[in-house]
Length: 340
Image (cartoon, rainbow, N blue to C red; front, side, top):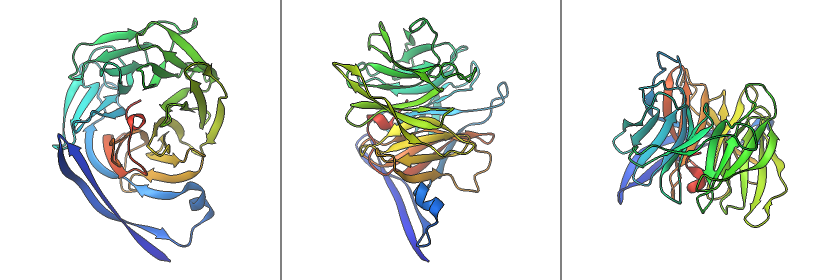
């Protein structure tokens, strides 16, 4: 059996300076490929970058989500289970490996974060209250963007993505608690005044992201372990939704989605600290795994890939706490590789 040494180094651009953030060599077996290995692609071993949270005493858990890079060497994440008064939105300085509270309150249950290309503000989905709020980049000036029913039914907004004009597309996970296929994909105009259902009858809609050319949406359904594609046309609305990938997750379920510059899909897995990577044609290219020695980690929820680079930051959580893990993505990061 031939063995290949894979060299992994990454350079992070921060404020115009190049910073070597990590470097390591990993060895992968090649040659005697089993049927299972061939079906799941190669294995990419993510490396621990830093721990951000420990389980909260009040909730007994922690769950990091929505990682998004701001172009200044900073990463923003949300802690879904953080109680009031503890950090609900966290800003990480990747160069210094430090963190600070960007926002907290006594109400919101934030499940995703993303910067708008229209006004530059940070948008958050509040799953529990069916609301979308926004913050200034420094964490201040909290504003209500959208609240209320859509087509007569309340939302449970999970993830979000933006088109080039700043309109929002939201995965509405409505019906999850009743195990009913009431989930939806909802478009909200950038002024927050009009909401339109683009797809319904979905099984706990979760991840959502545009393809690189903003021609269509990829979205996952948590309780069906599938990824669907929904063409979106500016003039004619939406047509031709279809199931694109069926994810063999075993006990794990499909969580958030990110898309790189080559159109590859990074499908996070709830119930397993790993991500499945697919081509836009549905080919399983790779599986991103944390090292086997990493105990107490149960889910990888999402990933942010450095725009113009391949350095990726994956949010991983479990009884051991909430962590950032890093790996080299298969292609460069773009807007669709950040947040949501």
